Image 1 (cartoon, chains in turn green, orange, red):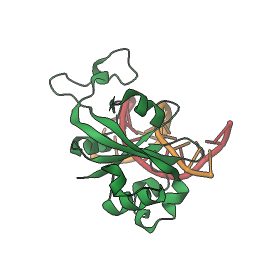
Image 2 (tube, chains in turn orange, yellow, brown):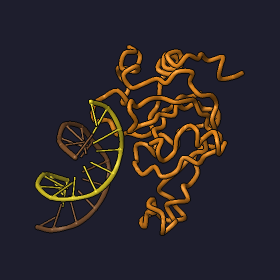
Image 3 (cartoon, helix red, strand yellow):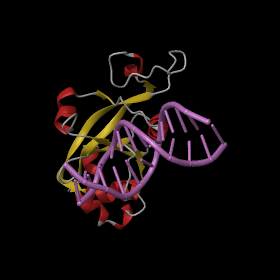
Length: 158
DNA sequence: GCCAACGTTGGC
DNA sequence: GCCAACGTTGGC
């Protein structure tokens, strides 16, 4: 099983929205590096939901990958801001996965909190100027952030 | 294929 | 609201 972090602006889509819908297609990713990570995700992988552009930015909860990568339908919808006229239906350029909520963190884990964890010093998230919206998380990063959020791995299987 | 201009992300 | 970082676009 692998671990990931997905960014979202909570004004657009946040943890309460995920809980409300139950299953969410993680669409609209239009960056090749992020897309390639999406394509590596497998059902059962765990993802942090990171709220960006909030004060402070933070991890809100843990999600599970419910469906591996499949074509992002918005790339073919002309009225969508995510429409990509260069993408061919027989060879879709952009992918999405489905995610479901697992558990909300007991305490928010802020970006500053993460920077205080030695396991996170190598993460793209804590580096200046980082814009990657989908990124891998190591087992140590996952475990330490979960602990900072007041949970441990047993809370994810209960 | 280079690189300047431009647009976007996202912390501050 | 500012601006650093950085990916993308398009002229050449």
